Length: 360
Image 1 (tube, one colour):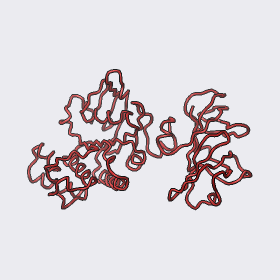
Image 2 (cartoon, helix red, strand yellow):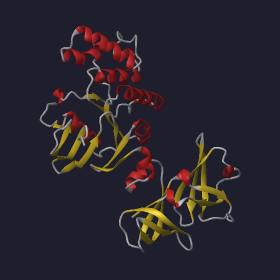
Image 3 (cartoon, helix red, strand yellow):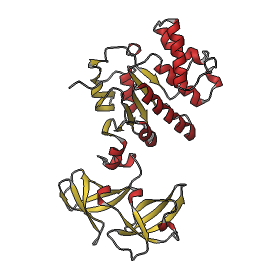
């Protein structure tokens, strides 16, 4: 069995007493789109900069095609990089910006001309080669930066928050462009973002960073359906957390109580706790079934509506349990349960235990 294309092994980065990255391990396959997702200060960008050669790890190693990168200077690693700020040369035209890394590598003039033409087609900017960066929009400049990073056909492309300076609509447009370009070029991409929606839209797999470590690695559906930690459950998608009593545990499944005879069993459990302790029951807002009135049948619990917000294709219902805990329910626009629903309405909430999680 061949070794992974890119290997990150035991990377640690310490600045004095501050540990920015602690024991990060990750395998990336050739052609994969891997996203580092996490809040500011979680270690995702530091890990990327170590791979780029801008930082040296305190301990650990990074290997590309089985060979360590650490002794190779950043400018000789042949790795492409796209930053948040486009870092285009303002005095050069679009064509000259894209050609720059090829000229540095002393490629033949005819090859440079053809490659610039190919890159302009790839990012859909044919006819823009003579413009200066200042004459282009932010989205266009970022596409030029992407074309320049890909011009010399690097084995790995690193992207550090490349779209955070763009407005929402333009950001979504460029996301689809990046995905298209990845599928067309099959370049291996490591992408840093704090935006979960962006990560879900772009990635083959996602590494969720928290406090300098990777909490979990998986596809978007895997992380959403089976979060390994409470942090991942909170960071991927929207979540409700309700305090519950842990009654029993068997085969990784928990039986919990919300008080009285409100009991749910066979719920996937994460963490270690003995029966009798408190735990947190996690529900996804869109997986909760809502019906009006106190006489509803079925297993569930009651709540009171505090607010209703129309969000286009769905409606957000802010509710409160009998114990005073807030939770959200998301219903599709036009759902029958919305009719006549208002502040102060008593509702009955149900869920499939297989879609819930218990965290201790």
